[in-house]
Length: 85
Image (cartoon, rainbow, N blue to C red; front, side, top):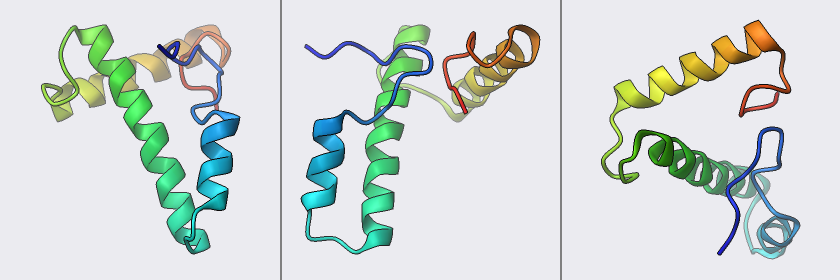
C-alpha cells in the first residue's frame, strides 16, 4: 500500500513520472496525464480527511479544503500546508 503524500511531497512518484514519459503521448497529453494522476491522489487525500469516498466528495467540500489549506499556508507558512507551491 502506498503512503499518502505528505505536505510538500511530490504527487507523482519517479516511477509514475517515468511511465508517463515513456508513454506514446504528445507533450500536452503527458502534462494532462501528470495533472490527472496528481489530482486523483489529492482527491483521495481530501476524501480521507472528510471521511467520504472520492465519489462522495462535493465541489463545496473541495473548495472548503482548498480554502483551509490556503489559510494554513498564509498563517503558518508554506511548509505547514499540504500543498506546497
